[in-house]
Length: 175
Image 1 (cartoon, rainbow, N blue to C red):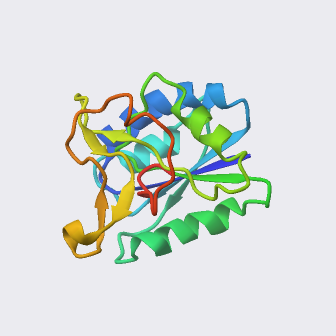
Image 2: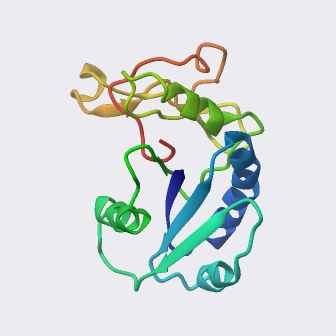
């Protein structure tokens, strides 16, 4: 089972775009998937859309809470408690503003998890409508006082950016 955890707040348009691409990506996985969405009190129609949501590809379990000041980790932890994954399950953190491409990105990420040395797999992220990298991984180095930064930020994506490699960290936008 793959448990997809997404946080949203006043992001109906983003969530609908993600939904369009996620359904296709899930079909390529060949595993059961459940999508958990935590809405923090949206006022843009997100709540109504989630309450009426029906899809043949995805089993969605929305969680509605009043907008609060919980941090990202607390919100993700609340979804993880609901998902209650077993040891053999996978958890996919997926931002509501991610749009998956036509390539089998999630299936490729899942395949990399077969390696027992791999604990987390991140994704190469592009800026919308461009071939420019948001990042090709996260690294720490003297460039920014040993603080984390996005590798190859705003560079054109190329074959090198598509290669799998080990990084010190990944972003939680899609991991």
